Length: 192
Image (cartoon, rainbow, N blue to C red; front, top):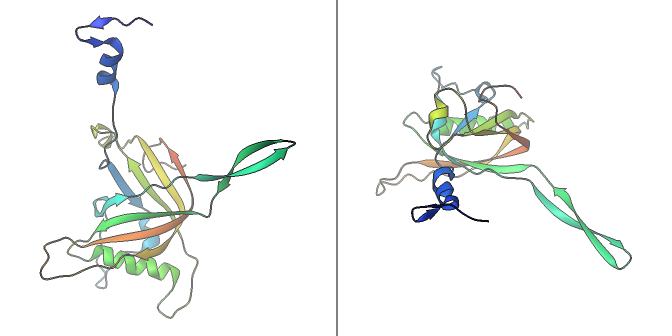
């Protein structure tokens, strides 16, 4: 295959620099189905859980095990879905209102109430929208793709460390489990 010379670069190299793009790790937003979480403050004021509270998220994927089938002297392997739900962790930054601590309290109350009774309440979906590096698609409500975790429930939260000798921000790692997820290229807020 012959390449046309364009100065010191070949056409292929030129295309590499013209067309190659990368996804930046910071171009994402997390959306909760807030009515299910009920973020009402003790004074009746609305705690504002916003997308900017989430500062990182792990996006798990399906994994497969391999099974072997013997056919005479030959072995054939096939993939089998290995799935017990998806655990994923979202790191949240706390604000001065204690929004994330209130979120954790309410997530615990979805699993067990103040009197110790267990519940099977789930958050119907937690969405992670990933945007293009230029951010241009945010203005029109679009995104590169969206991962929607379905039927989520709270598993655990990391402890906060308050320390007079520190100047660090308070963060919580909150771990959820989801029954399944789907990824698509619909606009955020559209129904599946």
